[in-house]
Length: 242
Image 1 (cartoon, rainbow, N blue to C red):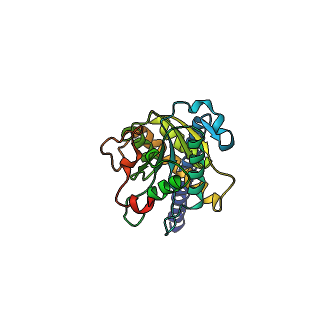
Image 2: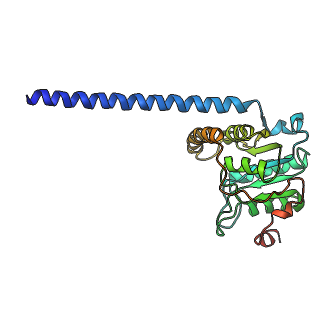
Image 3: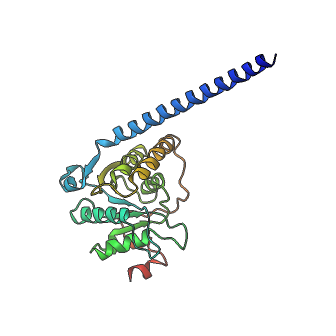
């Protein structure tokens, strides 16, 4: 009798393990399909930095969107962000678009990506009136949503690293923007495996965001991208831009 009970228990455990394993395989296959779909959907709209200025598809773009990704304690952009900024500024000077939209996290008084990004551009010779800040670009999805609904952009050039660019372009196009991307990376970065792994999961999340289309954390009044970028300055801007 004891042997029969133990046999049934082992059978149940084995069945549970098989179901769990099957679910893991199914999730893995689903995730791989979503990633492949997003990369395949966006790839044709992505250009390398060294050939971007010759891309005639940028003609008529409203702005260049530079996606924030981190600043040091002293407010200086981190390496990934510096590469994005320098690429976006080069594109601006080359005439790819008349405005820059710096989008990042400024949800706390102690942390400010966007003023740091604007200062970097102004110090590089970009007119302050041509640099807009999206203080509530808390995610790639929210950035693209707000670029459309707050800033009124219709055609955009997105600048970020290639591993991130597939998702950014996919989201923008899913939200109705005519979007093109420029990969700004000169090579691989320290911690690239972590960056790629995180992005793999983020693509699966934003795949559903693009289907359900939830509103971002904040919306607000319209700030036309063809206007004056100083309209997005805040009380910290004077200190940053001094």
